[in-house]
Length: 273
Image 1 (cartoon, one colour):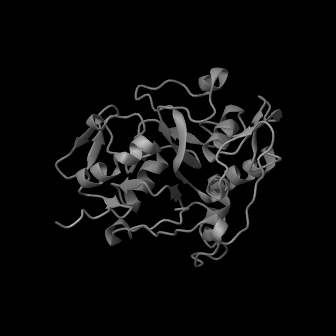
Image 2: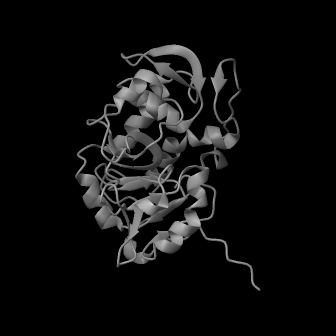
């Protein structure tokens, strides 16, 4: 988890190996706003774009588990935001990830934020769940998958962390600059530089990730075992992500309803009376 926020430790039974950190704690980052640019300008906004750098650096420092690699290339990793609730352990996540058949999987959501208008929307085919657009708050993939995204961000975007629009051939086609991590990934997908179904898949059935922005809580059905199921798709998502301001307001409610889960963020205790 690329974060400088407090997190609760995962249950031992989950078999997760949690690492947290923040890129700008060890690296100086700066970006000056220029003409025609838009996006989040605080250090945090720019640091988000370096979360792939942070993850690869952090994984490279882990104890050696093989003769050559600190982390085997085929082992799946997960990179998620902290406004999440986990309903699966490591074994189930591995099993579900294997069904996608791509080195990287992004969660999907209903809204195309922040940079997806006109023809760009046609890149993402309609799906029954309406979860058709990439959300980068939940990512699962192999080392090779994360390395590919890192490489494309630093090579296809010559002024990174400024991300320009790309032509169909994957070349820079606009002077408009976007400094927004999710938007940069969208631009790589929309240009075909990051190929859907080959390099990356979108979790439109909410098997791994359910992003709750624009989803009413009534669509979440509580099962007898204390897990929450997404009614529209019929899955019990492994990770519930309360993205956006509206989603974050749902976090305490989701955390209380999902009794059989790892609640990542510590919940505020009610004041004593």
